[in-house]
Image (tube, rainbow, N blue to C red; front, side, top):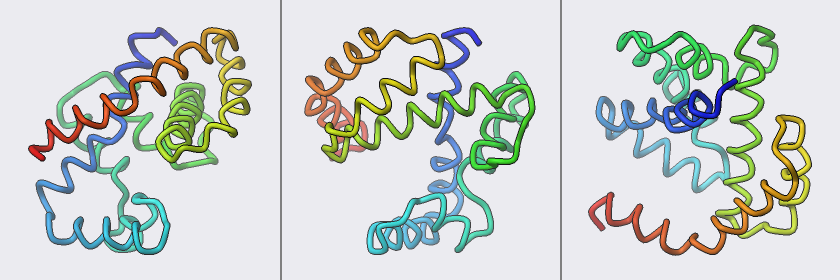
Length: 153
């Protein structure tokens, strides 16, 4: 697993959500409201309301674009805990990074050492993982401001 492939897979992870916003704006708005109201995940609410979650939609899009198979399979199987194929390690890494980001955004820094430990299984030293987390936490407000600017707010 090369860092550039993992980085690209991480960037593409939620591309299906963008697709859904474009194709079904009213339905997705309801999904987002339900996720917020219920304290549920967007993927869970999307699956219940629309029959697919953003990862499956993203997988279809990436396959249509003829991107390397690793990306479409990673997205398609992201929520499939029974998947044992060659992209399992990539999926596991993205899942740890995704969970780490959620903890950081929700202010649950006391739980981050667990994720630092989990990253060691992928060859990331605890010191390096902690350094990246510290840098991201320090830049959290700037990242949020940039996201708002991109969203036009």
